[in-house]
Length: 150
Image 1: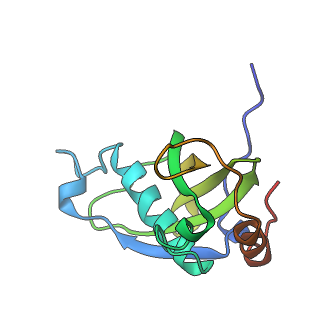
Image 2 (image 1 turned 90 degrees about the vertical axis):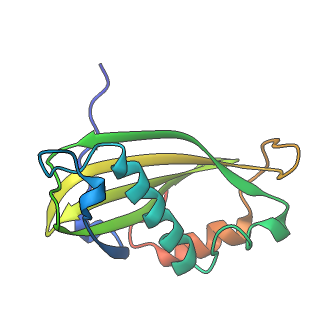
């Protein structure tokens, strides 16, 4: 069995955005229903792209690419509850030739509640054929990050 990656730590992230848990996101016990963590990850990714100067979707299209989610995993560590004030933290952890991996931490204070990893692939918008990650985007992300992408 592969060794588990260390959990995300809030201080590794440059980009954070607040989110307050709404009642509609909770189950009968007032606990965030688990699929909502992927919604939170999408909110974080959207804000991250804006923060690095590439608001989605329009700014990658001039490079002839769009991005498509191909994989997401969530490691649940603790429950978020109704009305919690959360911090969504996101960074680019790794670049491949045609893909990149976002690491998203859902925190309550310094406590990690969920550790999300989502891989996006760059592809041509019409044919959806894999295409290289634009170098200008890689450069902007690398300059922005505290922990440089692999």
